[in-house]
Amino acid sequence: MIKIYGIQNCDSCKKTQKWFFNESININFHDYRLDGINKEILMYFNSFCDLVKIINKRSTSWRLLPKNIRDNINATNIIELLIKTPTLIKRPVIIHEKNFFIGFQEEELKKIFTQTNNLEL
Image 1 (cartoon, helix red, strand yellow):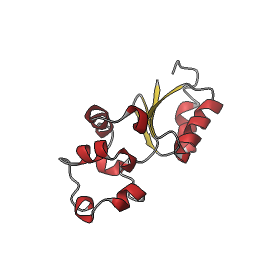
Image 2 (cartoon, rainbow, N blue to C red):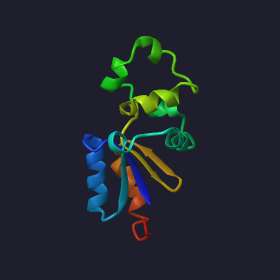
Image 3 (cartoon, rainbow, N blue to C red):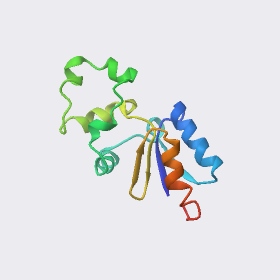
């Protein structure tokens, strides 16, 4: 099953969902605002990449954080920060088997998912 994490009204999430729909590929969408985010999900993300890499440093949420918090993010406090402010996470996060994508990357999606389209996803 392809799992997409994001926010329903995010343009990149909408494009991603539309792409999968147009390819007739089923997905499971996890909305941070409706479904929340927890330590287990973030640790799962961390198994693919360093959590610092999933922070959207161009976001309004990032700019609104106090400078002392932005300057002192580490492995100890990042999970608590992302649970408290999931809008800091780049969107969408797409996970399928060993494939992990951040953001809408159509060419990468084509490479992986048009080849596996015949699988039960």
